[in-house]
Length: 423
Image (cartoon, rainbow, N blue to C red):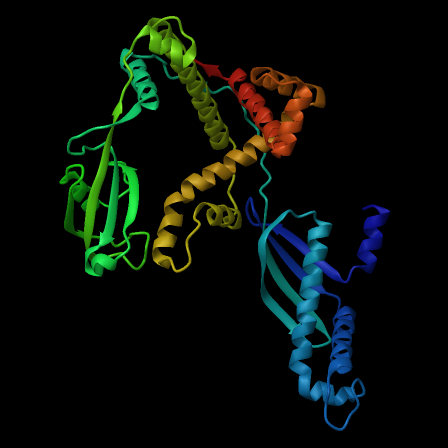
């Protein structure tokens, strides 16, 4: 025991025994020195005496006997609260506890002015010990690019470069329509509202889309439509209305032809074949990156399994509060069911973060200033910017710290991959 410890023991009013219940739960058995219990109770009684007004006595001059008769239980309650809070803060500081959530007090044994003992259960951040981080066998997914994959990308490029042209025909799914809608019951005085949207894209309720599909450009009709129970506007949800709908215009997407000229216009490719080759290379590179990421995640799962630890419920609950942002008035049972359904994924994410943090710390994988600048320079070159410009922009967007952590995580995954057999 050091001199500092001896001094603390001599002056410390709390006898605290700490017990590790599991990876995250600590039990604190606390006994308070009797002299401190009596002193604390006197202090609480004195505070109450200073602020209490009783008829016939000046403020602060009420006899202690009367304060005790009237407010004895309140004095006891405040005494216990004060000592429990002091003991908890003392234990956290003395044992360097990284606490989570609120402490739970139980087994309270109190005799006014004489003795006090109690138990505190508190959750702490689990200490992750990585005894094994390598020697695993992982199979990398084979990556291949099919002609159909390239065709799909090319077709999406065509759609992105499509031109909307007016057509004189009945609308179809995928067309963009201009319509005017008003409630039929409102008569000629009802407000007419214009809309423009793509059919089949979910912008309108099914009954309205069906009504529009039954019209030709320039036609108007009256339709009965039913709004879904979960419709966004509460006043319309679950109701049936009669609507006057006029179809003013239909526009269809005109896709560009797949020619060398098209390839040249969208990306300065000399031929359509060159465009297809570039798309294939990009798909292959993307697939390789995804396969590498999957290997890293499999290795991380293996490390988590080989170095098992429990996740504190309070930490899980905190994550769930962020994941399940239930609106006001939501059904409590549905919210609880939603929380239960995602709990396994949340617990895995927590373990993932804790293991990566410990791995980066244990292996010294955080980036030095020089290494970080080098990575920023590479990023800047890809964007055509200098290191200074890149750093300034990322600082403005508050992305420097997240980016440094991402680079450290990349190094952690590379460490895991290098330490195992990947085939």
